[in-house]
Image (cartoon, rainbow, N blue to C red):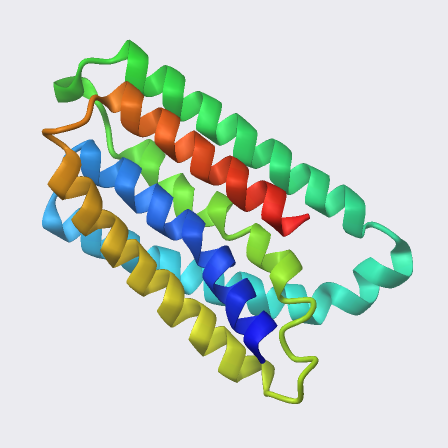
Amino acid sequence: MITSLTLVCLLSVDSLIGSMISATLGMSRSAARTMIILFAVCDGVATAAGHFLAPFWVSAGVLERVQAVVLLLYAALVIRLLVYMKGAAPSKLSNKLLYVLPIVFSLDNLAGGLGMARNGTSIWTWVAIVGATSGLMSLLGFRIGSAIRDRLSSRGLAAMCVGLLGFVALTAR
């Protein structure tokens, strides 16, 4: 049970990071609420999808390729965000790109869904736990990002977020 809860927390760290990035760009409260809901729903749905797709992935031997694609999408999105944040003035940044974060960051939950129901607990219980944890981590990320928006440069925050995403990617292997 402890290892599953640890996995849930690790899978939710990207919600925290994505929300920190979004908050430093000055999203409105309604946009922040939408993002929190998106992180919770996307992570929960991806966990359920991963659980139900697991037998196919394992028998077809595509699990390693799925993990590689997820890491490549992570890297591409982080690089795109860094270029986007560096090249545009803060007043010109659009929040539309940020709505992709919950979708891309939920892809790691596909792999997480593989092992969630192994301990006899219903997959739907795990879906609720993962969704709630991701939503809470997202809320925390918006609070932290808002608090440090004026204290840390966007480059410093981006570097910190890339480092944390790297940590999540390394611990997921």
